[in-house]
Each structure stands twice: as structure tokens, then as C-alpha cells.
Length: 391
Image 1 (cartoon, rainbow, N blue to C red):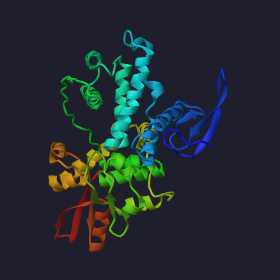
Image 2: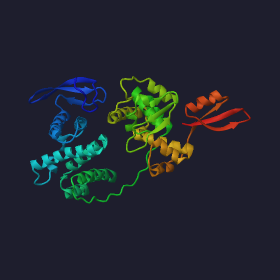
Image 3: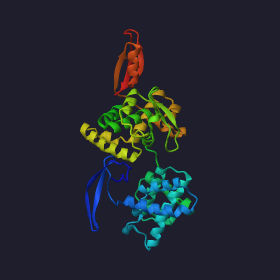
Image 4: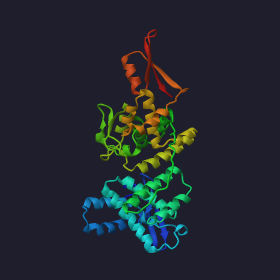
């Protein structure tokens, strides 16, 4: 069986035949991410085109590992999709111009790879550049890009991401371009309750539940949790080392609950990584399971919870408990404290409901702390310690 072009998994099933003019093509479905593809899918053709480009680079100063890294980009740089739609094609555009743009995109990806940019960042920028092309922009003409942006009804944040992508492309090819001004107002993120997050964890499958539990305890990004290795788990100290941070964050060590360690130990150890390294695949699976749980529990708020929402929740709760912005900065791995300040404005839990428990001895107190209860006060009259935990 071929490997999945989307996530690289070998767990492939046959999924019927696709009838074409040139004959029947075998269809496949990936059991990991649900992606369907055929024997000569577009992504496989793109890999062949990119391998041809790599062969042309043999005379240049680049080693085999660099060429292999370039080939790995072919899974998402869909050259066949780069062609503009007929109705959006610029007046007088020729086939030679379109072919030149395709080649420029591949060269741009290779240039950014040699500069040391992360592969996910390169793929995101290629996707944004393709979005500009679909909106009728000619990447070799900065004025047409400005016109496409001005005529689009995109949100300011998405338009800003398109500007960042094309600005990098223009700098690579020495194109003079003055980016349009776009003002992006920072939105206040949605903060769910701990009970809603726990409901999702309880309702998801074993692997997805363990992934969400790691996000809840560590506050890591989904892309960072995907890079966790078994060697990063320290069972003796109940800690997880985030040694492969993303977006320029700092490495850190975070304390987790025994429940998280137990959930991780229940997973099969099929390689050095704990989870699927393709965060997009995990996100798709989580979204499907989340929507089913939201319908089952009749709680539409659950649909507002994304993987990154749990990171917002963790940061908000840590600041609420400690009132120490520097500690929250360390947990999130932020280099600049300005990126952490937003969570100081999200703490407003007046009127929240609590679970209350009492402990008569040290052993009971330890058990309450392990499951997330926090100390309130000691009752001398009854001889017990009072703890609470938000519902």
C-alpha cells in the first residue's frame, strides 16, 4: 500500500475505484487522518515535479539532505493548484507567465528552506501566496497584488497574513512593493470552564484525550505537543520537557498531574514520538469528536474550543492562581512579556461555582492537591483543611 500523502501514515485501506477516461484508478483512504486519494493523486504528481527540480540543482552547492528537505515540501506545495481560475486570470496573462510563477514559488520555498525557516512556516506562506493568485494577483507585479488586496472582503487579520507572505516573496526577488496599511485589533480569546475541557477529554478517543490532557497541564501549543518524545516524559518528577518549541518560543519544563502520566503510559510506543507529528491530522480528528460531543451534551460552547483555546485557558488559570506574570510567561515559553500581558485582563471569575472538599490528614491533602484542588483555609473548630476546585 502507498503512504498517505497527507500525514505519511502506512495504515491505508482500499476505497473502491475511480472511473476515468484513461481507465480505472484505485482509490485509498487513510485510517489515521481520513484523507482519500488515488494512485496518481495531485500531490504525488507534485512530488515528481519537485524531484525533477531537485535534479536540476545537482550542479549547485547543496547536499543530499537539503534536496531531501526540498522534496518533503512537495506534499503541500500543490503546483497544479497554483494556476489561476479562468475568470480570475489577469488580462493578457500568458502560459509562459504562469509557468514562470510556478517556478518562482518553488524557488522561493527552496530559498526560505536554505535560510532556516521552519517547514510549516514555508508551507503556510506558499498557501497564502496561492490565495493571492486565486484572487487574480500576479505575484511578479506588486501593483496587481495591492489591487487584489484592496478589492477583497477579507478580515483584517487574514489580510495581514497575506501581506506578510507576499512581503517575504517580494524581498526574495527584489520587487519594490509598499505594503498597504492594515489595522488589526487584538481579539479577546474565548476561555472555557475546566469542566467543559474535562468533558471533551472524557468524550474523545484515547489518543486524542491524552493529547488534550497534555495541552491542559502544560499549556503547550498543538505543534509543540506533536513534537514530544517519550524521552521528554519524566515519571519520577511528573514533569514534561518541551524541548522542541515552535514560533520562536523558549524550551521549558512543566509539572503535570499523575493522571497525565498515566494516560500517556497507556498509549502504544510505536516510535520515538508520542503522538502523530502532523498537527493538522490531530486537529481534524479533534474537531470531529468535539462536534459530536457538543451535540450529545447539547452544549454549543464546546464548539468554540480549539486546540489553542486550551493554551489560553491554562495561561488565564495560572495567572489567577499565582498573580505572577513572569511565571505565566515561563509556562507559555514567551520571550517577550508583552505577549503574556493579555491574560492579566481575562481573569474575572466572579460568581463561579466550586467543588468543596475537606482533608483530615496530610495524605488526604496530597490526594486533593493531585487532582487540582487548592487550599482555602484551616478550620480549627473542626480540625480539617478546606479545599476547593472550580466546577
